[in-house]
Length: 191
Image 1 (cartoon, helix red, strand yellow):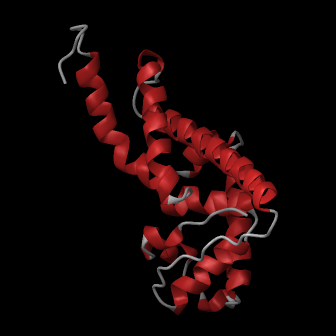
Image 2 (image 1 turned 90 degrees about the horizontal axis):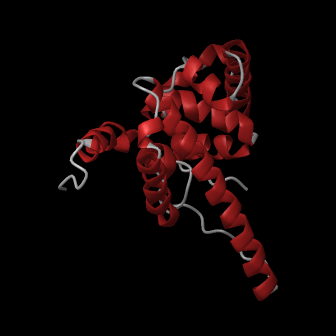
Image 3 (image 1 turned 180 degrees about the vertical axis):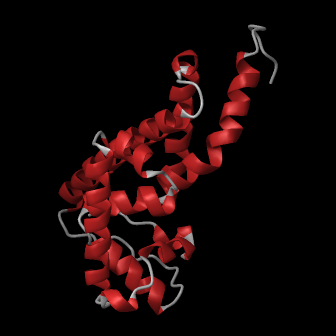
C-alpha cells in the first residue's frame, strides 16, 4: 500500500500488524463465535491505526493491543447479549445455542465441559496464561491487579479445574498440559 503521507507510517503499521495479527486473532477466535471474530479483529486493528502514534513502544505495545482486544471482545459479548434478548422477545420462545460440532475425543470434551462450568473470572485467567501465552505480569496488568493477586487467581482457577475434572491432584501431571489441546476446540461462549 503506498504511503500517501510519505512519513513511513503505513509501512510501520504493516510491520506492527504482521507482528501481532496471529496472536490477537487467536485471542479473539477463542472467545467469540467465528461469525463475529473477523469483525472484532478488524475493529481492534482499526483502533490501533487511529491511535498508532500513541501506542507504547515494544514490548508494551503487545499488552496495549491485548487491552484493546479485551475491550472489543467484551463489547461484542454485550452486543450479542442484546441481540439474544431482542430475538427472544421477538420469537417468544427459548432458543438453545447449537453445540460445537467438533468433538476431538472424550478428554477434550471433558476439558471443554469443565472449562465451561468454571466461573468466567477463572476461565479468563486460565485462557490468558495457557492459551494466549501471557506472562503473569502481563496478564495482571491487563486485568488491572497485582502480579501476586493474579498468581492467586491462577492457582485457584487451576484447583477448580482439577476439581471439575474430578482428578486427584497426584494424578494430574500439570494443568499446563492443557496447552496441547488444539485451540479451535477451546472456544468457550460464556453463558
